[in-house]
Length: 296
Image (cartoon, rainbow, N blue to C red):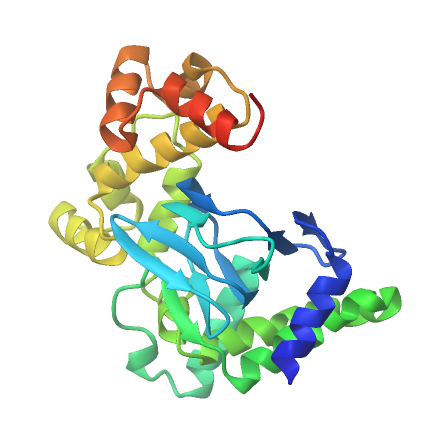
């Protein structure tokens, strides 16, 4: 019943298609009524819960399709392709997206680690870039309790941070908890590297720079990075740059400006790499996106 209550709450607050920020910082509600193919996107550390319909995220060719039985955890910034290929007026995609606060996640991970006596199973292993988890009662109740605050400004102000913390705890203790704990706890070198890269997309960062940043040898770093993200460090950087550029172009930025903004010194090199990845030149891709959204 709680899941149906969450769906009814979102439908009441968002009766038409759209993406809205709520009064809870980092919590967004969305409703999609048209099929959208998977296009380049950058996922920040986030939890995405679907109450109706299905959503898809593609990471390095692997498709992650999820609906109202599973939620998606993205514990680190990652370049993906995302879309809603089955959404329609009759069967809309309805859901909520919660941005994870790294400091809160780290504190909770440390508390959990202490509570289990420093058990090594919570600390070892490679973090996953994307993980799906079944809705359990703890997660469902925490999400309902969080969203119910939207109806009362006083409750929201007083209880908001506590309810968000409860939801984060539910994620850490759920099916995707191991992936989350590895990203935010001890051994989170790959997540820290991605944060480091995300702030330097327009700079020339080498594998040695990345490995030095987290105190690893080049060989160990390369292996662990690929295990976590499914991509080599160089491939990851290139995909992050191209996805960022594609998003900027779709928002109206010129091709040359977008290329420069993400660190490309040569527009021709940018166009070649863009076409190799997306199968179209940046200008043709931009036109097709505008056509799909009714801009032209």
